[in-house]
Each structure stands twice: as C-alpha cells, then as structure tokens.
Length: 387
Image (cartoon, rainbow, N blue to C red):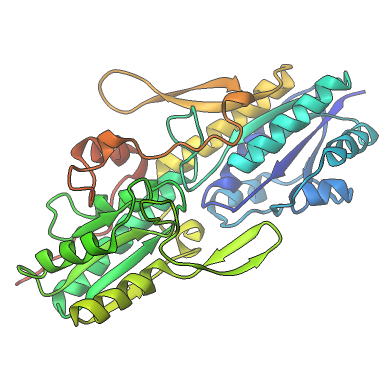
C-alpha cells in the first residue's frame, strides 16, 4: 500500500506560499510512492482536529492558479502547541497512513517542524518531517533568503517609488511609511531599491537592528528639510530604543500576542509636535504580503523549487531538515538548494548585518542593494517629471 503525504502551512501567508504548495503537489503526484496528498486545513489546529483536505486529484488547471493566488489555499494558523500535541499529531498521522510531513513556514513553523521530528525520533516512528522555508520578513537562519521576501521587497520598493513621485509633486509633508518586520529590517531596507538615482527613493531608512533615538531622528529630518520641503521616511514597525524597549507602547495583549501602536503615526506626530511641520503616516501592512500584482518572478520560481525539493527530500527518507537556498559564486545570479539540519534553523532570527547598514545608521549600503536586486526584479514603471 502506498504511503500518504501531508503539507501544513504555518504563520502569516506570503505572495508565494501557494507556489510552494504547487511545487509539493506537482512533485508528489508524479511519485509512485505516494497514495494520497493531504493538507491540514488551517494549519496545525486543523491537523489536531483531523480536518484534512485531500488534494490528490486537483486538476492541473486549478494547480496553475495557485501561483497567482494570494493568502494560502489551505489555510494557516499560529496555534500554540504543547508537548502532548505532538504525540497526538503522530496518532493522527498513523491513522491516515501519512508517512511524509511537510511544514511550510517561518521561524515558529520550523520550530514546530523540529519538535515533531524529535517526537517521531523519540517514539521510534517511521515518519519523515521536512521544512519548506517561507517568510516575507526574511529572518530564517542559514538560507540566503526566504521565499516570500522577494515579493514583499518588490512591493515596498515599488510603493515607495510611487509615493516619492507624489511627495515631490506636492512637497509639503514629511511622510513616514511603516514597513513590516518587527525584529529584522529586511523589508524596510528593500525600500532603498525604489530608485537607483536616489531621487525617488526614501530620504531616511530606520531598521530595528539599530537602537532608535527620537532626538537623532528629529535631527535627521531637520537636516533633510534644509534642502527639501517634502521627504519620505521608511521605518520598521519594530523600532526600539537603546534599552530594547519599543518606542511605541503595547496597546493590547491577548494570550501570547502583543499588539503595538503604529510607528508611522507616532513618528509623524513627533515631527508635527517637535518640529512644527506637516507630517503623516502610511502603513501598507498586510497589503505588502498579499499583492499578486507585484509578485517577484524570481520569488515565484524559487518558491516552486523549494516545494518540489522538500517533497523530493521527504519522500527519499530525509527527516529533520529544511530546504535552504544558497547563492552560487560567479557571474550573474543563480542559486542551488541544500537540506540543512532543522536544529540550525529553529527559532533563530537572521537580522540585517552591519555591512548592509550605512555609517549614519539611517540607510543602507550599496552592498545591500546589489544583494537584494536579483530577488526583486524590475521596480515600477518608467515615469517622467518635467520639474
């Protein structure tokens, strides 16, 4: 009797998580070892409730639509799990003759992947578990970058480029754009790709890797306003002071989750209050991870690739691994995949390194631009100004 496979999504969706699902299904459908292809409906919670979706016979036409569908077609979750939940998962997996398990997600999901692997190992269960990288925040360790980031980076860069044209047209504001990434500033940094000439790129960029000083921020803004009457600032949602305290206090807590106020509104109000200058905050928020229109082609291709490679690895007997992307040396951009130990990834956050941050700590370096450009592709349409 053929063994079955299940794929589980965890954490926030990206513009390409469904592309990885496409890769998994396409590979698994062609494998004689696989009987049924399951998905957990709405993440680990769905698995524990035995809410399984069977995807074995999904038509090729519908599979192709996955690559242009935002969110996740099978649902996801951030369910808190206890030790007994992993043992319950194994009981359910055995009930449905599921021998191959794929977790697609970020740091928390890779932690779940590793814990299920360890539980299977401890109980001597013949179940293979492999992780598929996914995070728009790009903070997964070991892998050069994560599927989901390239599209989020293209969204923020394109949006900021268009915003900069708008602000130059009516230069009367300091506009603060709040970018996703609470602890790692990769998306915030990617806004610098808006315009190579710098004219339609952010004037100031603030990453969570650098302790934030409101006094220095105001000085930076004042300095820019000496030469421009309309400026654009991009700031990470997770800015903290030198003591590690968020500059915007939590406004709501429920369970393990903490909700903070908007950085963009806080900084805009600071400019108004302290400098007496018009300012406003903008927050793309979930739009940055949901945009199919601004998907990166490279991001889609690599998301499909890691899905296929993860299915290949788990079916061949690999377990306790995550598929990582490695950037190859040589001319041009090309990558290869490798299976890395899940222990090296679990709950480790990869932050923007110092060599990618400018000396003034309010922007990025050319080295970052060169690293990021291949992942993003073209930025916006060609535009014109007669000013």
